[in-house]
Amino acid sequence: MQIFSAFEHSVHLELAINSLEKNGIGKHAMFAVPLTNRKTNRRLFDSIHNADGISLISTGAALGTALAVIGASVGFKLEWGPIYWGLIGAASGFLLGLMIDLFYYKVIKKQRSALRGKHPDVIFIVECEEGKGDLVEEILWHHFALGTARII
Image (cartoon, rainbow, N blue to C red; front, side):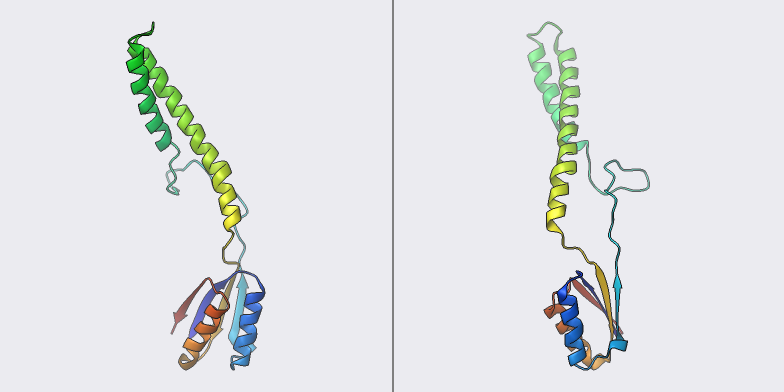
């Protein structure tokens, strides 16, 4: 049986290895693979082949609609009329919403993801008999594994 687990590269992984050795799992039955994390930033604009579910135009569309209605209704009293002011309101609302979304995803979301920081750095594989599977998994969870999986 093989047990796969994901860890951050920390002292907890070393403690898990030490605990497994104390419980009769030899060094030859353990294998750790370090992962390389993404170094480039995500693209904000999607292509036809790659989409991440983030829409930059939804806020712009909502604000554009709202400001178009306001511009058209106020435009009855202004010199250019409701059509021009409605179009001006739609364009300015769309641009304002686009700038809000760009600011949110470039500045605020980037800071939150940097603060969150919990991402797996090491895949740790343990090979053992089926009888020791529960013990090995319990040791891995005790030492803060981010996730585990069993293959029989």
